[in-house]
Image 1 (cartoon, rainbow, N blue to C red):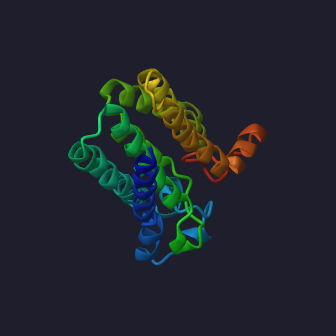
Image 2 (cartoon, one colour):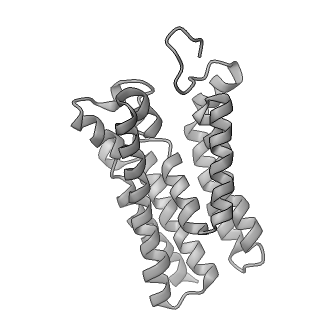
Image 3 (cartoon, helix red, strand yellow):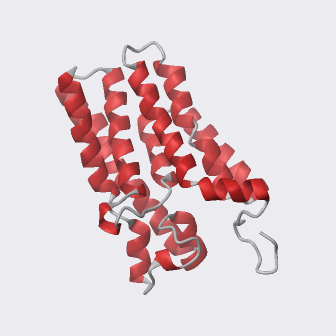
Length: 219
């Protein structure tokens, strides 16, 4: 068990290093802007989209996905098979890698621990950890539907982050590692809600910023 704990911590740290690659900040600098000084002040995809346009938003999103894909796919398909780990431990260590990336994205040491909200990287966690086409498609459809109807990206994000613990419960509830798996799964959701605390307040007050809102439209 101690070996597994040490392995999980090492994988978490490696994921954190990848997460500290702040795509939105770099894209902003390439466009002559510190993205933290405009819009919501966030380094994530939504602020890049609002502040710098669709191209910058797409690059930021893809970059944030990639920095999660690399360590998670390596753990899932290279390290764990080589170490002889079964399905349950592979899932657990893949989540550890993803959690490290989210923590690095949200609290990057390179930006004095002031990072993004972790939704794009959490989406990558859902994709890589589950590799379940139907589950991924349903999550994507729900996110798109919520954002399309409400134009609140934050609301769609806060719903989708529940997919990680839901998947863990559905497919790993009989695992001997389930308590740890569920705990780590719920951390993703908790981090998203903590980082979206101001968005939640605005949603409740009806003042949350809408995607593609017109200047004269009340947000």
